Image (cartoon, rainbow, N blue to C red; front, side):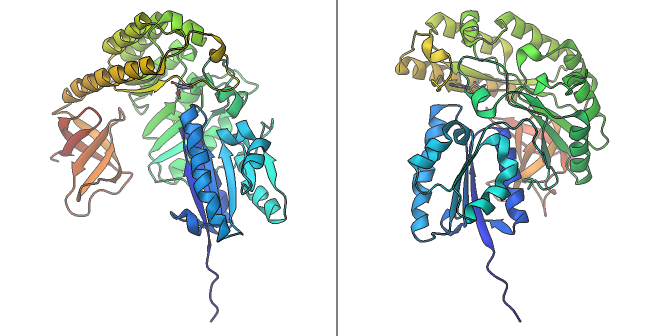
Length: 443
Ligand code: 5AD
């Protein structure tokens, strides 16, 4: 009898947005096809991949501190490969290889499909940088190692052509490229056939999708995907306010399987800040869009992103942001202190806000938003939601899941519990600021 060789192992750490999450799933899929299996212990890995984010400076520092930890494992495992991937990889390129001697390759986000090839060439001695934005990318979707079984992510548009003055994404993810409708629908059908109930369409400005060499826009795409039999829940992230057309709003109202949840970053409640950010809309434009969406879908939960301490932000500007939060009652808010990024225009605008001031604004905003969410979620007590079960709770005999409006629900289970990926009616007993507690509704 022969002994099977010990399988080789990979360790993959991911930071950042859903795009990065999906890129990691694509890389994991390629490694598994090479017979390299996941491990939770970096010290025993044969391949370590760091999929990085550079949207704020703090995110960028994290990848370098991990790299500092993992490079030492190479002393005991000289055959170990370490790859820097994602947005920092695109940004740093060659520089990363010079800075970190233990680094074997640098792989940008538009080229994750080339991981297998890069590993093979490294084994032959080449230390490579694969960055940039090839015009044609071969997007293989049948070997993605999907995490979990309930949510299938589908990229529809990559990159961004906008020039928001704070944002590094156009540099790290490159110019906008759209996938064809036929290809997107093929991937959606493939996911449904595998039992995924929820489809999440991805793009940095997801609602700016256009059919390449065609007429169709994101409203047509939403319509087409929502009609695919078996798509129980359809979500999309992230929408750009200015690109939302009345037809898109209409589609959100028309298809019940489009989730009544929308992430719509406003960034600031002050027109002068929005102008300096070059967002291309006013606070009133945003208000009108939010109202139209809520007209179309009265149960719609809106979430948003806010930057505080943007150059030139006065106390009055900040107060306008606070007023907008009170007025629009977001179901959740992702708030960040402004962080200057290389190659962006905002650092040259002047009017830097002192760190303590930005800190204080951030705390103030987060505190008030907690109260808003506490009130909103309390109002849901007694309601019954169809909850898509996504995991086990930290408490014994509990599970958790998501309402159609994307709120997290924890509930006790009896017996073996509900299979992950199934939908269960849950009555809400308590609304906390960041989650709901409930129990299975009596049949
Ligand atoms: N500083 C702080 N926050 C930023 N974001 C993007 N760039 C920066 C920056 N330079 C935030 C925006 C965006 C979210 C993904 O990250 O709010 O919507």
